[in-house]
Length: 236
Image (cartoon, rainbow, N blue to C red; front, side, top):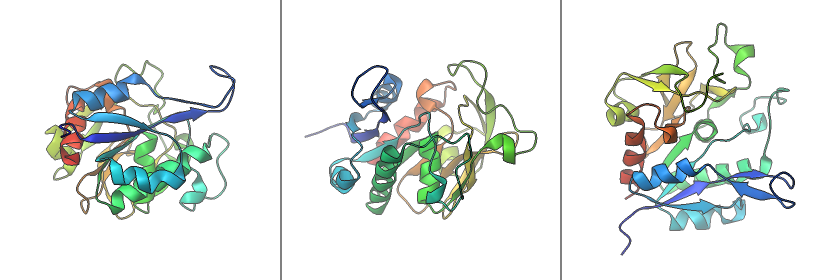
Protein backbone atom coordinates (compact mmCIF):
# COMPACT_ATOMS: atom_id res chain seq x y z
CA UNK A 1 0.00 0.00 0.00
CA UNK A 2 1.32 3.44 -0.95
CA UNK A 3 1.96 5.63 2.09
CA UNK A 4 2.88 8.82 0.20
CA UNK A 5 0.26 10.56 -1.97
CA UNK A 6 1.16 10.47 -5.66
CA UNK A 7 1.74 14.04 -6.85
CA UNK A 8 1.81 14.78 -10.56
CA UNK A 9 4.27 17.58 -11.37
CA UNK A 10 4.05 19.48 -14.64
CA UNK A 11 7.24 20.00 -16.61
CA UNK A 12 8.72 22.85 -18.57
CA UNK A 13 9.64 22.20 -22.20
CA UNK A 14 11.98 23.60 -24.80
CA UNK A 15 12.32 23.04 -28.55
CA UNK A 16 15.32 21.36 -30.09
CA UNK A 17 18.60 23.16 -29.49
CA UNK A 18 20.67 24.17 -26.51
CA UNK A 19 20.94 21.11 -24.29
CA UNK A 20 19.62 18.69 -26.88
CA UNK A 21 19.20 18.29 -30.62
CA UNK A 22 15.67 17.06 -29.87
CA UNK A 23 12.80 18.70 -27.96
CA UNK A 24 13.22 18.22 -24.23
CA UNK A 25 11.53 18.52 -20.83
CA UNK A 26 13.19 20.03 -17.75
CA UNK A 27 12.35 21.22 -14.24
CA UNK A 28 14.32 22.51 -11.27
CA UNK A 29 15.03 19.82 -8.70
CA UNK A 30 13.70 21.91 -5.80
CA UNK A 31 10.11 21.43 -7.01
CA UNK A 32 10.49 17.67 -6.59
CA UNK A 33 12.49 18.04 -3.36
CA UNK A 34 9.76 20.22 -1.83
CA UNK A 35 7.08 17.65 -2.66
CA UNK A 36 9.15 14.86 -1.10
CA UNK A 37 9.86 16.97 2.00
CA UNK A 38 6.13 17.62 2.26
CA UNK A 39 5.42 13.89 2.32
CA UNK A 40 4.50 13.32 -1.32
CA UNK A 41 5.72 10.98 -4.06
CA UNK A 42 6.33 13.18 -7.14
CA UNK A 43 5.97 11.96 -10.71
CA UNK A 44 6.60 14.01 -13.86
CA UNK A 45 3.75 14.55 -16.33
CA UNK A 46 4.59 14.84 -20.05
CA UNK A 47 2.59 17.32 -22.13
CA UNK A 48 -0.15 15.10 -23.54
CA UNK A 49 -3.56 16.80 -23.35
CA UNK A 50 -5.15 13.61 -24.65
CA UNK A 51 -3.86 11.80 -21.54
CA UNK A 52 -4.79 14.50 -19.01
CA UNK A 53 -7.93 12.69 -17.86
CA UNK A 54 -6.05 9.39 -17.52
CA UNK A 55 -3.28 11.04 -15.48
CA UNK A 56 -5.82 12.63 -13.15
CA UNK A 57 -7.46 9.25 -12.57
CA UNK A 58 -4.14 7.92 -11.26
CA UNK A 59 -2.61 10.74 -9.20
CA UNK A 60 -3.74 12.16 -5.85
CA UNK A 61 -2.65 15.77 -6.35
CA UNK A 62 -1.47 18.09 -9.12
CA UNK A 63 1.38 20.60 -8.88
CA UNK A 64 1.36 23.11 -11.75
CA UNK A 65 4.80 24.68 -11.92
CA UNK A 66 6.13 27.99 -13.24
CA UNK A 67 8.51 28.79 -16.06
CA UNK A 68 9.71 31.46 -18.47
CA UNK A 69 6.47 31.63 -20.46
CA UNK A 70 2.96 33.09 -20.28
CA UNK A 71 -0.65 31.95 -20.47
CA UNK A 72 -2.18 32.69 -23.88
CA UNK A 73 -4.49 35.73 -23.60
CA UNK A 74 -6.88 33.95 -25.98
CA UNK A 75 -7.77 31.62 -23.10
CA UNK A 76 -9.21 34.45 -21.02
CA UNK A 77 -10.36 36.99 -23.60
CA UNK A 78 -7.29 39.18 -23.23
CA UNK A 79 -6.91 40.13 -26.89
CA UNK A 80 -3.64 40.04 -28.81
CA UNK A 81 -0.52 38.97 -26.90
CA UNK A 82 1.64 41.78 -25.52
CA UNK A 83 5.11 41.98 -27.17
CA UNK A 84 6.63 40.75 -23.87
CA UNK A 85 4.42 37.63 -23.81
CA UNK A 86 6.10 34.29 -24.54
CA UNK A 87 3.80 31.37 -25.35
CA UNK A 88 4.30 27.61 -25.02
CA UNK A 89 1.03 26.28 -26.46
CA UNK A 90 1.77 22.58 -25.98
CA UNK A 91 2.56 23.08 -22.32
CA UNK A 92 -0.38 25.35 -21.61
CA UNK A 93 -2.84 23.09 -23.45
CA UNK A 94 -1.83 20.17 -21.26
CA UNK A 95 -1.67 22.10 -17.99
CA UNK A 96 -5.10 23.64 -18.50
CA UNK A 97 -6.61 20.27 -19.42
CA UNK A 98 -4.96 18.64 -16.40
CA UNK A 99 -6.01 21.44 -14.04
CA UNK A 100 -9.62 21.31 -15.20
CA UNK A 101 -9.65 17.52 -14.90
CA UNK A 102 -8.16 17.68 -11.40
CA UNK A 103 -10.69 20.29 -10.25
CA UNK A 104 -13.55 18.26 -11.72
CA UNK A 105 -12.40 15.29 -9.60
CA UNK A 106 -11.79 17.54 -6.56
CA UNK A 107 -8.14 16.51 -6.47
CA UNK A 108 -5.71 18.72 -4.55
CA UNK A 109 -4.17 21.35 -6.86
CA UNK A 110 -1.25 23.67 -6.11
CA UNK A 111 -0.29 26.28 -8.72
CA UNK A 112 3.03 28.12 -8.50
CA UNK A 113 3.90 31.33 -10.38
CA UNK A 114 2.54 30.70 -13.91
CA UNK A 115 0.66 27.76 -12.42
CA UNK A 116 -1.16 30.18 -10.13
CA UNK A 117 -2.11 32.31 -13.13
CA UNK A 118 -3.34 29.24 -14.99
CA UNK A 119 -5.39 28.20 -11.96
CA UNK A 120 -7.05 31.63 -11.92
CA UNK A 121 -7.89 31.20 -15.62
CA UNK A 122 -9.36 27.76 -14.83
CA UNK A 123 -11.55 29.53 -12.24
CA UNK A 124 -12.78 31.81 -15.03
CA UNK A 125 -10.48 34.69 -14.10
CA UNK A 126 -8.36 37.08 -16.15
CA UNK A 127 -4.73 38.24 -16.17
CA UNK A 128 -2.66 41.39 -16.51
CA UNK A 129 -0.47 40.84 -19.57
CA UNK A 130 2.43 43.08 -18.53
CA UNK A 131 2.53 44.62 -15.05
CA UNK A 132 4.65 47.73 -15.91
CA UNK A 133 2.05 48.76 -18.51
CA UNK A 134 -1.00 48.31 -16.28
CA UNK A 135 0.02 48.94 -12.64
CA UNK A 136 1.14 52.45 -11.75
CA UNK A 137 4.08 52.49 -9.34
CA UNK A 138 4.52 48.73 -9.53
CA UNK A 139 7.30 46.96 -7.69
CA UNK A 140 10.04 45.14 -9.59
CA UNK A 141 8.14 41.87 -9.83
CA UNK A 142 10.99 40.53 -11.95
CA UNK A 143 13.33 41.13 -9.05
CA UNK A 144 16.91 42.19 -9.86
CA UNK A 145 18.43 40.23 -6.96
CA UNK A 146 18.81 36.41 -7.00
CA UNK A 147 15.69 34.24 -6.80
CA UNK A 148 17.17 32.65 -3.69
CA UNK A 149 16.53 35.95 -1.85
CA UNK A 150 13.30 37.81 -1.01
CA UNK A 151 12.03 40.39 -3.47
CA UNK A 152 9.22 41.84 -1.35
CA UNK A 153 6.56 40.90 1.17
CA UNK A 154 2.94 39.88 0.65
CA UNK A 155 -0.08 40.54 2.86
CA UNK A 156 -2.23 37.44 3.40
CA UNK A 157 -6.01 37.79 3.67
CA UNK A 158 -7.53 36.61 6.94
CA UNK A 159 -9.89 33.67 6.88
CA UNK A 160 -8.38 32.13 3.74
CA UNK A 161 -6.90 28.67 3.25
CA UNK A 162 -3.48 30.28 2.75
CA UNK A 163 -3.82 32.15 6.04
CA UNK A 164 -4.73 28.94 7.87
CA UNK A 165 -1.73 27.16 6.35
CA UNK A 166 0.97 29.74 7.08
CA UNK A 167 -0.51 31.23 10.26
CA UNK A 168 0.87 34.71 9.62
CA UNK A 169 -0.43 37.97 8.11
CA UNK A 170 2.69 38.56 6.02
CA UNK A 171 5.38 36.56 4.25
CA UNK A 172 8.63 37.34 2.48
CA UNK A 173 8.57 36.10 -1.13
CA UNK A 174 10.73 35.97 -4.22
CA UNK A 175 9.33 37.44 -7.41
CA UNK A 176 9.87 36.34 -11.01
CA UNK A 177 6.91 37.39 -13.14
CA UNK A 178 5.75 40.14 -15.48
CA UNK A 179 2.13 38.95 -15.69
CA UNK A 180 -0.32 38.76 -12.79
CA UNK A 181 -3.86 37.77 -11.94
CA UNK A 182 -6.37 40.56 -12.60
CA UNK A 183 -9.51 38.74 -11.43
CA UNK A 184 -9.92 35.34 -9.77
CA UNK A 185 -13.17 34.32 -11.46
CA UNK A 186 -15.15 32.05 -9.14
CA UNK A 187 -12.15 31.88 -6.79
CA UNK A 188 -10.88 34.46 -4.32
CA UNK A 189 -7.68 36.47 -3.89
CA UNK A 190 -5.70 35.45 -0.79
CA UNK A 191 -2.52 37.54 -1.00
CA UNK A 192 -1.45 40.96 -2.28
CA UNK A 193 1.88 42.68 -2.87
CA UNK A 194 2.36 46.19 -1.41
CA UNK A 195 1.55 47.66 -4.86
CA UNK A 196 -1.78 45.82 -4.99
CA UNK A 197 -0.66 43.12 -7.43
CA UNK A 198 -2.40 39.80 -6.75
CA UNK A 199 0.01 37.25 -5.25
CA UNK A 200 -2.31 34.31 -4.57
CA UNK A 201 -5.70 32.78 -5.36
CA UNK A 202 -7.77 29.90 -4.02
CA UNK A 203 -11.21 28.34 -4.40
CA UNK A 204 -13.18 27.57 -1.23
CA UNK A 205 -15.46 25.23 -3.18
CA UNK A 206 -12.71 22.67 -3.69
CA UNK A 207 -10.85 20.37 -1.32
CA UNK A 208 -7.58 22.19 -2.01
CA UNK A 209 -7.22 24.57 -4.95
CA UNK A 210 -4.46 27.04 -4.08
CA UNK A 211 -2.16 29.19 -6.18
CA UNK A 212 0.75 31.41 -5.13
CA UNK A 213 2.64 33.81 -7.38
CA UNK A 214 5.97 33.28 -5.64
CA UNK A 215 8.14 30.15 -5.52
CA UNK A 216 7.72 28.38 -2.15
CA UNK A 217 9.97 25.55 -3.33
CA UNK A 218 12.90 27.91 -2.57
CA UNK A 219 11.74 28.24 1.07
CA UNK A 220 12.60 31.96 1.13
CA UNK A 221 10.23 32.32 4.09
CA UNK A 222 10.25 29.71 6.90
CA UNK A 223 6.50 29.24 6.31
CA UNK A 224 6.91 28.15 2.67
CA UNK A 225 7.35 24.41 3.42
CA UNK A 226 3.97 24.46 5.19
CA UNK A 227 2.35 25.14 1.81
CA UNK A 228 3.71 21.90 0.38
CA UNK A 229 2.91 19.94 3.55
CA UNK A 230 -0.72 21.15 3.49
CA UNK A 231 -1.01 20.38 -0.23
CA UNK A 232 0.29 16.83 0.18
CA UNK A 233 -1.90 16.23 3.24
CA UNK A 234 -4.96 17.38 1.28
CA UNK A 235 -4.03 14.89 -1.46
CA UNK A 236 -4.25 11.92 0.93
